[in-house]
Image (tube, rainbow, N blue to C red; front, side):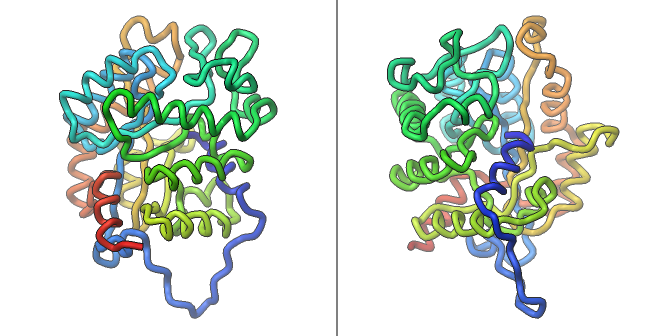
Length: 321
């Protein structure tokens, strides 16, 4: 998920959140799930598993040897069977569905799981998913997006896995006309969905008017028995900042208490990856950061609690509706 996705989260509402000056601070979702006040809880999440072999190797490395605690799979992509074999050897891993409505690369692409006849508005002139989010927004009806969401979840279940959560590749399902369907499917199937509903420290940096409706959606999910996050950090640090490892260490020092979801795109680029994307250097740096001694030490020094979607769901279930 990128900055566009965070802006879409903001467009779910028109009114800013207003708090009385002397009001007591709201409890974070970490507190509501039973952690002590002031706890800093983090999910380090690896996007794009299943996209290609190199992405699978990066996700495996980050989850096996690093601080990463979660990943999600792009079920329309060709390397999904390979990743699911890796998951079968590691069934306790936290794995969700990376709902994929775009195929953004120039020469490495994929089509919808539901098939072109079922979701024609999601398909471009090459028979693939559209390159860009806004192309999807202009062309695909909410019914088509919901059908594709369900088809991707069904493919996951067909592999024998119940996903720990749903999230969104490039943030497409956060578009206002699709967000309701995304939330609806999650609630109906009892699968947690990625949605910030707390202080939104980093989300608000991309959309200064913190969204009352985003909080209301979070409350809707909570009332339905699903867990909610306080914030999302996409790892899109300002240009000219320090290296990726130091950026992540700085994030751990500066983050507010609550549950923060930090997104990385871990990859072990082979010589082939250059023909997929020019992002190999950045993705490799994020992989190295996840397994670095510096980040592991920062987690320890800052008293960070690493968690998973599975643990959040277990805590939420104990509270009840």
